[in-house]
Length: 281
Length: 213
Ligand SMILES: Nc1ncnc2c1ncn2[C@@H]1O[C@H](COP(=O)(O)OP(=O)(O)O)[C@@H](O)[C@H]1O
Ligand SMILES: [Mg+2]
Figure (cartoon, rainbow over the protein chains, first blue to last red):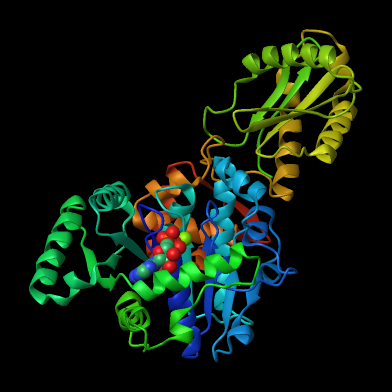
């Protein structure tokens, strides 16, 4: 089983969108995937998928030892994909978020222990998961650390703003001691005009690699690519939000499923082999 | 549940017998404990409506002191869990009463060596229930935490996480879970043991490693 945690310094850089789109793409090509929402402070995987009200929250497993089978939902029939996609949803209720804000050492350790157990369980039947993806909360919280510890690859998403660059490099420096052999950086929300110029791109790329690698001394942080800002993506999100405001049912669009030729999909799909260091296309 | 220590203390706070199941200094010595215990008992009598013979539990610094009164003496068991070993307290108390009624009632001038055979009984009882660390290296106040695991060097982290996933396991189980050879795993287990994080116990003829959380 390959495992990935998606991390960032700031919120709103595209972690959840990237996590959901990668997970769905892998299930679409026949892989068994498990996507866990470990952003307990800002649960949002739920905005992409329809959850059966009977399914318990991931919180129930991690904090209250609820059996895993009751806390995972197989979303694949809903999406009509050939592989299976199991999702563990984080509870977005105010009281659940409150619990996670006031978490103590004992509880956070319990969550780590149960995450490790989930990992183990997912490898065997009935799950036989080949890809595990954790969408984590921004910043360095206990849940970020738990996500990093339990996965083999950490993917940091950055936005090219000074605040985020500085913050991310400090975050990486802080986590340096435990950076895995594979720590990756992916830049999202990049102005299109910049990306079109090969020269500028390669120059910025080496600047970024220098910045992150310098902070981590002997460890190398791999910069794996760029995702442009997409106007239509922003518009779709806006229209879905309006629907919600009007009390209509709404669900965020998963590009790799509904619009595989969209630049957001193609860019992301091309990066998947690099992220997992394999040839799954 | 892991048992770290046991004390038998007379009514006046004098320790009659004490037994430690790990080498560390994390658990108070018997004289100090005897004094603390009497203070606690008086306080408990003042502030609670519990019957004097009911089990009482006091948690300090992640150690839980469970105590039960048997008239002229009290049995105290120190563990890592809030839930107390009620049956064990009862068994030990009654057994101690049976074996040493005479000595206890002889207010003073008791030769404490008289209680040595009783220590062996206790040792056997605890071992049979695999409640104690046989390596003697487990440190009661040293527990795995997210931060602690994060700070471990990568090879120790892998081993610690494997043990946490399994809860307890033999060398073979743990090295299989880590996906590394037994020599490597032994090295990491030894280091973690030296740091006080893990203990060892025997169950059905097998050496099992475990940790306290
Ligand atoms: N490349 C992109 N172009 C345009 N909008 C994007 C892009 N990536 C993400 N977004 C939008 O940014 C917002 C935040 O994304 P989200 O995935 O929720 O971030 P995070 O999980 O890091 O908080 C969403 O509205 C999302 O649709
Ligand atoms: Mg998010």
